[in-house]
Image (tube, rainbow, N blue to C red; front, side, top):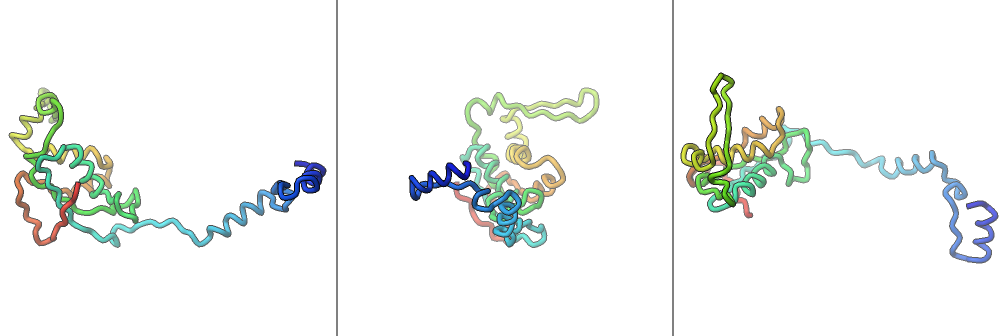
Length: 183
């Protein structure tokens, strides 16, 4: 807006005159400096792994959908529900999942979902469906679902060690006084 137009606007439309930043004396450098001064005291918080308070959580997977159990466990393991969450630091808690054999799969996944593994040798490809895996080792259903939801790097491997999955409703972690998770 030119100076002549702003004077005209100020004279004929009082209270409606709009001045540009330059007319008010605010150049780009002054604006940047004033912005920096406003937020000079605010610093980005970065958590340190050895200063994070750890809790123990207990998830009962009895008649719960596998994906929902895995999402809740993965978020607790990563620490995503904490205010101090830092993406590159392990800020999560310990998670105990009980009744892994009673976890529920929706639809036809019990027969159609397949789990594959390869030993690295010729003919070392093995495949089984969810029903066979549940009969053989039901903890693997929950463990594999959670493993797919955490980072696939050194941090993820460290986080994954805090997951404890048990077939039945008993576990050896009573001394840690785990808190039950509500769905």
